[in-house]
Length: 142
Image (cartoon, rainbow, N blue to C red; front, side):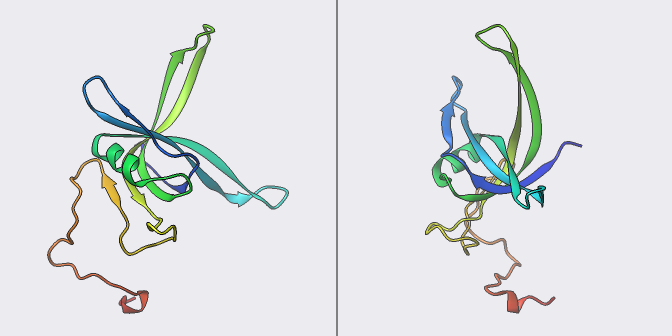
């Protein structure tokens, strides 16, 4: 099984591409803090490359900016290519299936209206029937 979930901050604005067939692609890097502190007591970060396609890419290109906190669900993929100097280069990327912004439009965290993209479902702006929105944690039954 190849499945990963990361939460981190965008290091750069997403780069938008369109393939020759008209398919949207987005590429960006996310800084993800490591779970434990190093010997100096600091938390290091890993800088991971994320690639999104189609509707998810359009969402990323439109709503995400450098510094935004995001949650990404996807899979890890490796590929290789021949560099101009003739050496073989290897690249590891996260292929995003779901992307959720954890930053409000005004820059704060955990806003009520968080943009979200899912590669498998069209974007929906209304809540599914049978669900009741909860505004505060105090209303939760647990």
